Image (cartoon, rainbow, N blue to C red; front, side):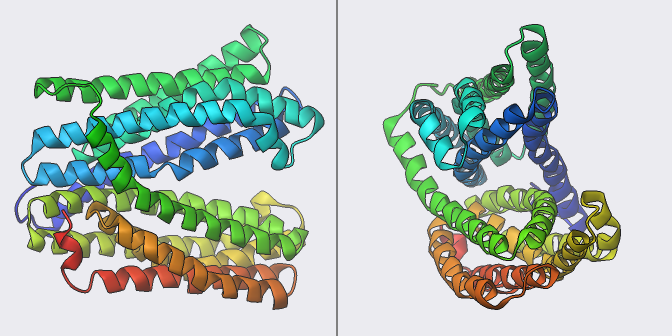
Length: 442
């Protein structure tokens, strides 16, 4: 990174990291979409089983996203400090942590699959199909987590193109394997699980080879180091807590939406899906901020850190404004695409407009999250994550108790989520960056 590039120079760096990251982030959900499209032709029990099993699997993987974030931060900071060998050593230990955690989680899920899936509501034939899919797909769980950690290493090196290439290749391989196992070998839903598992394992092997070549070039051993693995676990634990608080807020929102009736819940599914899709773009910018800030802090360059912070915030808030305008302006056109029920359409429009108002705040929040993660400020994010969730609970339950059902209720739910929860996150993160304390964490 140039010592003091122009705004155009920063923009090029931000986009060079963010655009491939966005592609990789979108490629991951394609695994489930591909499986859904193929499995859907097997029958209703199979598709329902896939829904339950993939939800469980994606939740487990989502909770482990700290493997990518913590690794990106540590590698970027060490590289910024000119400690390349230590950066690679930290990355290798992070990958060993991911592999060990993936094996442990795969064993637990494999043994308890019918019980967990049953607790999620799967019964009879749906439970049978869900169990089949989960047990055939979980051999790929260590690969999924290893891909996260290896991607974090490469992001720390400001390489987001390699993970994108591997993610696209993995999605294509998943499609081919799933079709072959289901229609060629007549394995049913088990073939879908096996295809996904093999694709994830293949991605992990390829990224492992890429990182391994960098490591061997520096003469660093690929063997696990206990102290390094423990250090990675320690740095990732606060981000795990932060992720749990985020998931809890989303689950609380769904819980309240369920109480507002079928129309509001159907509308919420659409609004939430579009919000999550928009989040991919904001998260890509946040990951770019993560890598650039981590590198600058590792180098002890506070001026560059502040400039990167300012420029990425401009990008994040600007993207939020654009997305908000799109959400609100196109809501009457979007709603009919998802439902022919006029009541549901009205709920979608009301929810999208409410969500659009707070999208610029979301852009600010995502960027500040990325900046603070890049600075290694996970402990702070964990603490305020819990506080933000506590602040949101009264607002959510106020909607639960007093909001009307239907479109108006959904609008109030998204106002509560945007104003109180997203707003609390913006205030907490904004307070943290007022001075330079967060820059001295490397």
